[in-house]
Length: 125
Image 1 (spheres, helix red, strand yellow):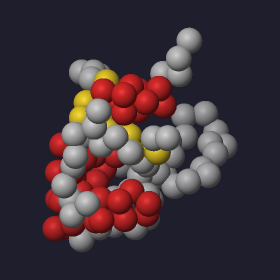
Image 2: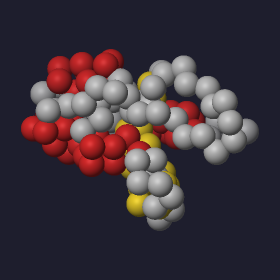
Image 3: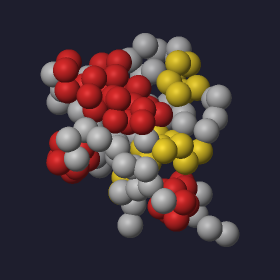
């Protein structure tokens, strides 16, 4: 089963319309943020779009890529890559351990793994 990566605080529930989820408070050192960011960028594309999302730290500015990627075991959205690269926001601990254990090297997932990653966002009909 493919696991989804996040940079947002787990368990957050909006209490008012228009609220945006808070980012994880932990920040990575700059050198590791660069390595994790490169890993995220190198993932296989699951779904590509030119749509941009809002940077929750800059108000309503739409600059966040929305492309979805995978390494075959984890799947992540463009905001994960963006917040790691731009602000050094730490992704989930399980994902960090996974990337570190792989020595920051992405493997090429199979077509079946890419389809499984896509199913996380678009369940089969």
